[in-house]
Length: 554
Image (cartoon, rainbow, N blue to C red; front, side, top):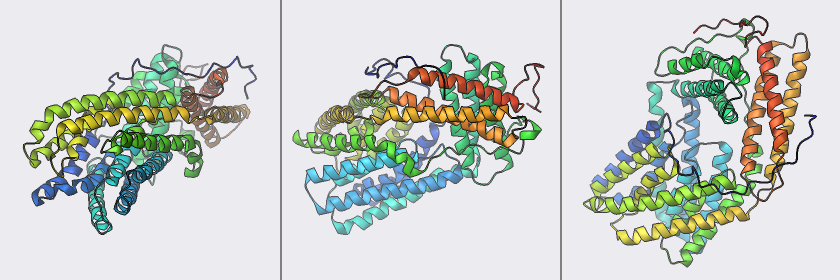
């Protein structure tokens, strides 16, 4: 443990940011993959229904097709299993919703069921780290289905349609493996190298170095998790592991790393060419085991309890408020509330602003497109395909931009069963958006998360123990390559977890002040130990000779 006396902790953050909330960022490197996949998954089923004159069933085929939005960052071996669980989760939520809709016509009961489903979907998606779009799509499917006219006899057929299109979405997402079987793990490794290069540019002390370092460790951890989920080790995986180690070393000692070489390796990972051979000390060449920092599902569920309560309460109250106002589609308010909840209050506020702005602009876009869509059902389907593509193109730049396309798409989907009055649809959408965002955010404020400070303390303890373990090994005359490698990587994981935990807690309200100085001291001492460990392993230039003890082939 650090022996330094901590300064008085800073007070909890209570500012609600506005600057930068709507700032447009760079697009995701793989924006085209979910965009093309969702179009390929939606188009054949919807066009088939159009030809059969049964576009009223499109809501059920869309449920399965939207599963194509998931798991694009995962290696194909892991993607196959993840998508199966996504499809099963979608079918489970849809089944509960359809059965509830067939058994009761009480809107209050249906909203309550939708809120409980939304909370379960939020917690499970966060606990399993399924990734974007997370629970929002699943909640949209189940909530909308709650208010679709239904009988028990129809439920099996509607579930069969969703299951069939879910299987088609699985095939669409797995198809790129035939062309570039190692594409996801190559991209994850390249991202780690680029993030490490960005940190190396700061020299570890320049402007923005703390943010760059946190991003670097997050990228490295994501790369390790990607590589560890690829199945049996292969020659390609071993070469990628060595590159991730080079990124780790750059994060441990940025001033002694070559950012240009890191970026050159990242560029070489594009396409299907050979993986560059970074080289490592011969003693460590066979010891690359990575870090499996994943905790069990049950361990991750505990800290999500406040988030589950926020989601259930916020969604239920938003739906009830919508009903009280006489809105015919309370699930819009429910889904708006469900989409808000992030790691802390500050991020939830930002998402609320983005959601409202994006939906209002999206309603205006719908007003412009509605006359065209009403020319015929074929045009309606094509407009939905265009908006589904546009949503995935834009959403990685900022959530509100994606909402500009998601909103008209959702409004057009309601017209698959028959054209409706645009003015009424637009009014209800705007009102439900505002109600859902306002009530949902108030629920987040009301449900406190006092465990955030406890998690920071636990993360501090874990980081201090990992540093002390690495320091003890460094003091031994012959600690062993595998032991040092494991200690270095364990310390890196502990420091990354500490930074993520501290950042999440800093945006939470109604808690005791956080030990900010202790966090900074733990990070500083931990990174010094990381650099010493990497140097002891021969992964850094020796300070006495200025030469590396490795075979580093470009």
